[in-house]
Image 1 (cartoon, rainbow, N blue to C red):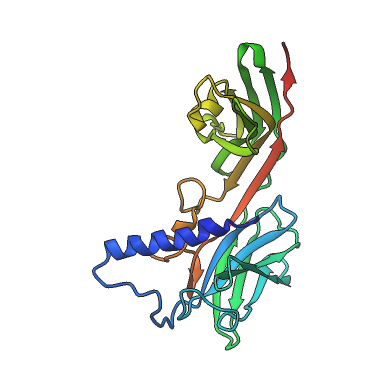
Image 2 (image 1 turned 90 degrees about the horizontal axis):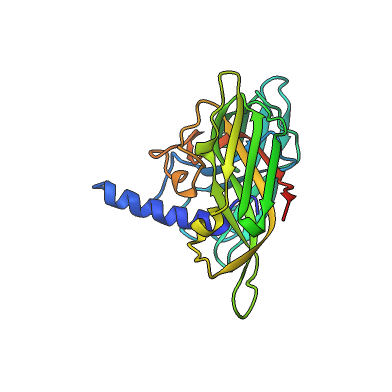
Length: 285
């Protein structure tokens, strides 16, 4: 799923509570709003084959119905040649009354390019977001070794980046094995952002020891066994105007006072370079 459904709804609720606590003025989610037209959230990834953004009108209903939320006209314009593409509408439902509209395009996103995303309602009113994409990331070199017998799980990751690193982690897909059964697979993300230090020319080399990383993340005792199904390295870079410390959380995108690059609206649309590279380890006994 390109955007987390449950996380986005939880972010709205948490942000509303935050504003209630920090402002003397009572916040009413159903009050009329003539200035903020749309809530727009998402990112343009120069390495993705499909781009997704979530666009929702800021209206008078907390849980809008289909009739109160007609599709917006969402377009993406490229500065260098003026090309404009129209994003397609996709309706995602949580239940009979709560839903969101995600918009997508398979248009290639260029690195080091400026874009304007526009959401327009039937009255011709617009919310816009200006996005600058970072440089592309070349594939990285990963030398990973695993020796289950002596508990070795780690190695080196080398590469080059020309922009600020927003976050990086390794996703382990694992199965926990109990005395009675094997549990369904789960993903465990081990953050390595603080292990990557690019030099002045962007080169980096991270030395990682993850022999205890999964147990530490899940707080597993040594009496509990698990099996690793896959390992994936994830690296995301952004431009210098990135306003967040790390990944964008849904709760940071709802109110413009917290952080927004949307004119006449709320939310944040960023330009990123995000790669996901499978780790193929060398096994030894």
